[in-house]
Length: 202
Ligand SMILES: C[S@@+](CC[C@H](N)C(=O)[O-])C[C@H]1O[C@@H](n2cnc3c(N)ncnc32)[C@H](O)[C@@H]1O
Image 1 (cartoon, rainbow, N blue to C red):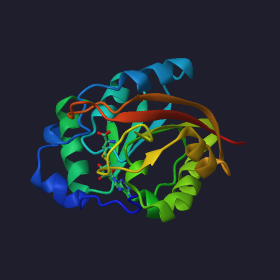
Image 2 (image 1 turned 90 degrees about the horizontal axis):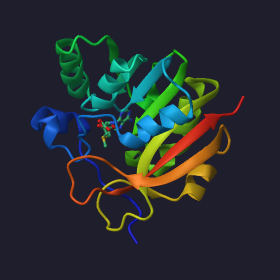
Image 3 (image 1 turned 90 degrees about the vertical axis):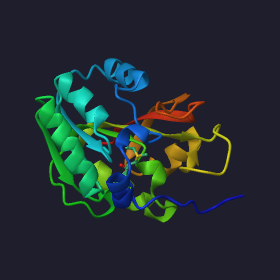
Image 4 (image 1 turned 180 degrees about the vertical axis):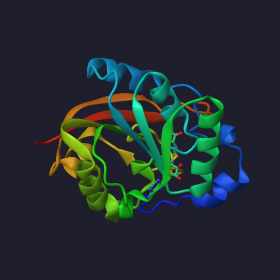
């Protein structure tokens, strides 16, 4: 069984390839994310789109009336997404930031992580949990989309069961739900994914 996984140099990737060709590119808000927002009755408020990459989810959230901040490790991803937001007339605060060494100081009603957590090294998960919890208001939500253990094959992001998510986040979060879904993007078939709603403990 494979233990460590290899990921691209994110900055080089965004410099070299158009975002539309990337496996995670979805021009629209994922339907399951939209459904989760409805279930949580979140219609506005402050959102952090963590690891925003192409920025499409941030654009869609801003269009729905959320106050959006979007961050990514890659400076180029941020620059390109900010230019697109500008063309669309969207007010989004973009910032280069490494979630494992974050300089963010705000607190949010919602953090959307669509595909960042599952590419981080396993030994950094504790830092991730503490950082993300500290960036959320008490009782508010982390919406986490990651590959599911039902996705077979050795390539790509780490996979998780709902029980593993519960265990990793237990110190700061309560797992409200974990839904089996797919990771919308450019791959065929779409990879199997989990959409987790994690509520920060008070
Ligand atoms: C699979 S892509 C998903 C991009 C975007 N969320 C989307 O759904 O289109 C993962 C993203 O996480 C970013 N990333 C990786 N490590 C990061 C870190 N330590 N801090 C912030 N972003 C990171 C990458 O640059 C990349 O844009």
